[in-house]
Amino acid sequence: MLGHHADRAKPDDQEVDVEVHLEHDITVVQQAADAYLSNPSQELRQQLLASLEALDRQTAAADAYDASFVGSAIFGYSPKGSVIGETSRNPIAEEVPGSVFRAQIDLVKAAKAAVTEPGPKTFDTLRTTSLSLAAVQPLEPDGGRT
Image (cartoon, rainbow, N blue to C red; front, side, top):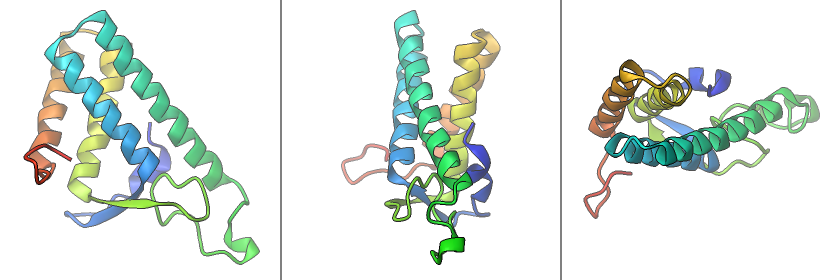
């Protein structure tokens, strides 16, 4: 789902650099999953599916950039891959705790299963991963989650 970039998450709770557009799309999936969990309607399932499709487009762009020669060390640039999900030579990165990023990946996988194979098992898995993510996400100063 998140391509080979997801394998770059660091052990323990070191922060990882995630491209801001990728992190935004993951946050949108999280919000859509939370809405679907609170009201599992067909309309909210479609919104969750749409957010997953947007995330897939972002990860496909990152994978295409990673596979291209653009910005590669061959042309004297620093090696690609220092930012998860980068799509250009000068990515804008957001630092995310490794535990949060891993929980986000789990949530995305569970959300994908919940929309492609709807049923009690996938719904429960989505609920569990959502709760796991909420448990590791830091609180914003206003009391909300990041």
